[in-house]
Image 1 (cartoon, rainbow, N blue to C red):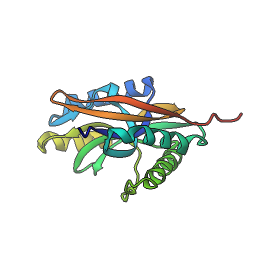
Image 2: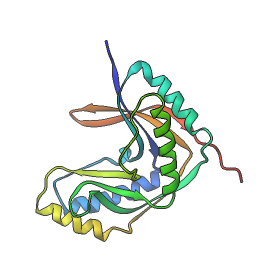
Image 3: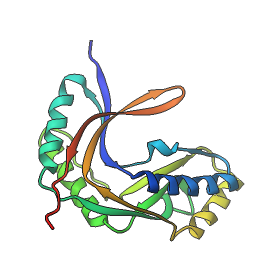
Image 4: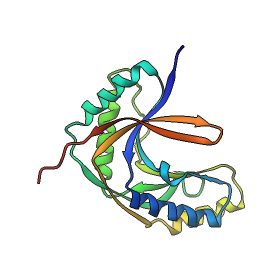
Length: 194
């Protein structure tokens, strides 16, 4: 039987920043409908989405991620500024972006992208934009217009800093109740030398 696991690689967000981001999501939710908000415990920063991979390849992929990031130094990133894809005026995916530490996150994502390309995964063609998804717009309505205004209002919202010390390979399980994540492996980053 061919078992396939929906897999992605990313960074965790610290508890304090997750709580701040959730507080923003609650403010937005109180003033606009039509959005499916992500639960706080699922907030993360995706570096590479691998989609469904055969179970027997999981171990090798985890090992490859560990090798790819082994020498990459730990760093701090900051979640600051609410926004949306494809734009604030037409929001479909509501997020907080990375401002401080953005270059490090992008460089790390590129390292993982290259490592995955070496074993047959396609390169990411779209420009990488590091963010944490807060919610997804389910239907466009008058309240969604309100969401656009609110996102502009929270353009400078600061959810705080996270020290990135490891990369995580997650499995994503889809069910009627929603998706849940399981850690498949962790890949420590190099410690910064003082």
